[in-house]
Length: 180
Length: 120
Image (cartoon, rainbow over all chains, first blue to last red; front, side, top):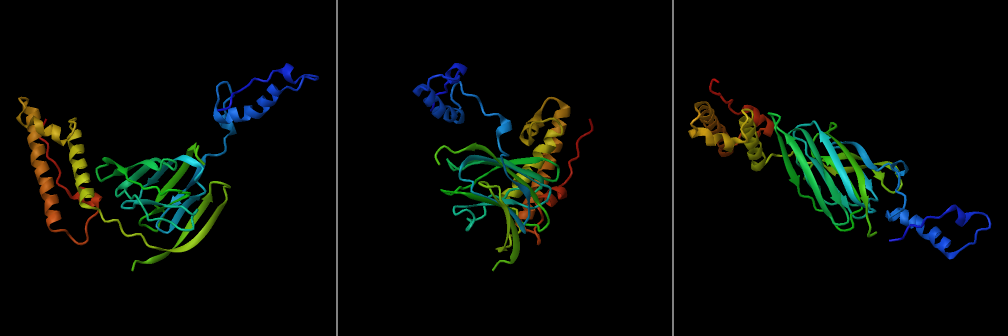
C-alpha cells in the first residue's frame, strides 16, 4: 500500500528545489488515494460514476443482461414482482454473453415477490433470498442456491413465465475486485 | 421439444455503458409447477400466521396450551388443533389424489378451511 505524503506550499513554491521526496509524493499520492491509505483524502461519493449496472423489467419474452462484469467483486441485486406464479431466473456467461449457462434460481411462486441479495464474482459465493407472499399475505423467506462459474463475466435475467411484464430487476456494484 | 419464442434481450456493458438490443429464439420457460415442498411450506406458513393472529409465536406454540390451566387459552388451542387437523387432512387428500390441473399455491391456501375461534 502506498503512503500518503502531504505536499506543502513551500515544497512547490517558486524556486523550491525539486527533490526526490517530492517526486515520490507525486508518484505515490494518487495510488494512496485509490487504496484508501492513512491520511489520504477519501473519494467523495460525488466523484463516483453511477454504480447501477442494469435496471429494467424482464418477462419470459424480454431478458436483461449485463456484460463485462468481471472487474466487480460484489454485485447487489434487488428484484420485485407482482406477478403470481412467475419465477425470476438468472444465468451466467464466461464469454461475455456469446453463450449462456443454464437458468438458475426460481423462487417467487406467490404474489408480490421480492428477491434480493448479492453475488461475489471473486469468491464465487452468493447470498440471495426470495420473499414469497402467499394468499394470507404471509411472507416466506427462502435462500436461493446459485452456482457462479469460474471466469463469469456476464449475467442475465428472465421471468420463467408470463409474456407480460413480470419482474423489475436492478443490479448495482458494491465493491471492485482486487485480483483482476 | 419445448416451444421456442422470440426473445428480446437488453444488453448493457458494464465497461462502456453501451446498451444494445438483440433478438434470439429461446426455449419458452416451463410453467413453474409448485413442488410438494412449495405447498408444504406455504401451508405451514399459513398455519403459523393463523396462530400469530392470536399473538402466539407459532402453530407449535399455541398447541402447547391445549392443557393450559387458563380456560381461554386452552379453548383457543383446542380450536386451533381441530382446524390444523382439517387443514392437513385436506392437503394430504390433495396429494393422494392430485387434481388436474394442479392448483397454484395461492389457490390452495385460499381453499383451506377457516378456523372458528372460541368466543372471547
